[in-house]
Amino acid sequence: MPIDPTDQAWLERFLRDHGGIAGTVHREVDDDLHVTAAVNIPPPVLAAVTLVTRGKGMAGLAQVRAEPVQTCNLQEDSTGRINPMAKLVGGQAAIALPIIADAGDVRAVVGIAFDHDGEIDGPTVGRLADGCRTLPPVGGVRP
Image (cartoon, rainbow, N blue to C red):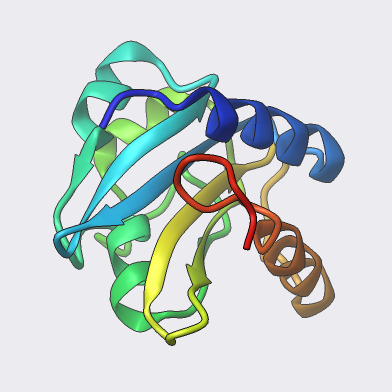
């Protein structure tokens, strides 16, 4: 999937509203995730995450688990959940948030990175998840 102008504008606004320094939107297509928007993602990283196989990396884990997946520091994560190329993003605390469709399946995953390290607390995760629900469906038309 190419970069979608509606998703790109939404992501830029989402990052601005929530203090993120980098982010992505991945849409689910045939069980895999395809990037449709990216902000401050270096070209080699973008090439590596254009297609995310189900269950791989933070986005793929958020997709499979249908719950947020986070790291305290992209630069120092040693869990194996983070693609080593993510260090090129320059962010520290980061979270991948699945967007659940009305039918209960994951329709997209939004990633956001911050310029500080540390765990993202529950209330903040809740605000981010609420913000993600405003991502328009494919084609930019809200139901």
